Amino acid sequence: MVRINLGRQKIAMRRMTNESNLVVTFSKRRAGLFKKATKICSLCGVKISIIIFSPGRKVVYSFGHPNLEHVIDKFLIPQVANPAAASGEFQLVDPPMVAELNGHLSLLHDHLETQEMYAEKLDSDRSQREAVDWFEAPLEDLVLEQLQILKPANGTGAAFGIIMTPQGYALC
Figure 1 (cartoon, rainbow, N blue to C red):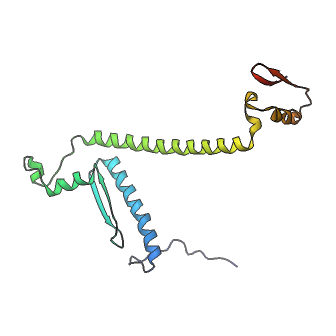
Figure 2 (cartoon, rainbow, N blue to C red):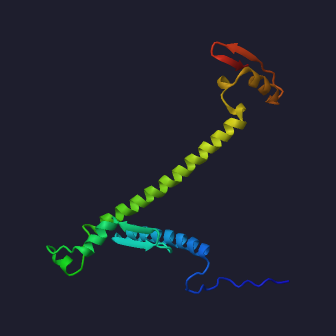
Figure 3 (cartoon, helix red, strand yellow):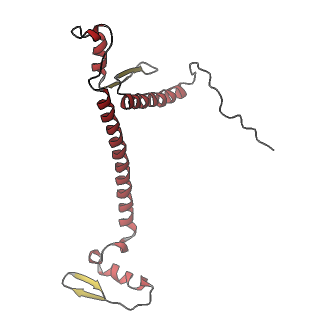
């Protein structure tokens, strides 16, 4: 039987009736909106503020660049000494420099996240290896019983023995 794929369907833009679906959709879309706001600030050097009330109006989420209060104050308390501010236009100090610094900050943030994930993976791999693969440890760290187990596991047919040295045990 041939299965017919309907493809991507258009979602009707109306309020969701299922409360759990509404909460999940809200949190995902909120995160996506904040991520887009961060990108537009980095790429274009704009000042932006977003205030979002949760569906139950219990929690208020906000985002602002450079910060929420700074952007809101620009509109609530206009700078009359500046003629551009009196007309409602606001000028960044140096838009290309701000955009460059925001882009550099985004790259550093991404690099830091990558390095942190890599460090966590290395730590988990190391702890798993220490628990299971004791034979990969340096010979100086092994005890006599482990060295005796390691000796027949060589498998190369080469004869070697365990000798006592002032530093500890060694294979010869």
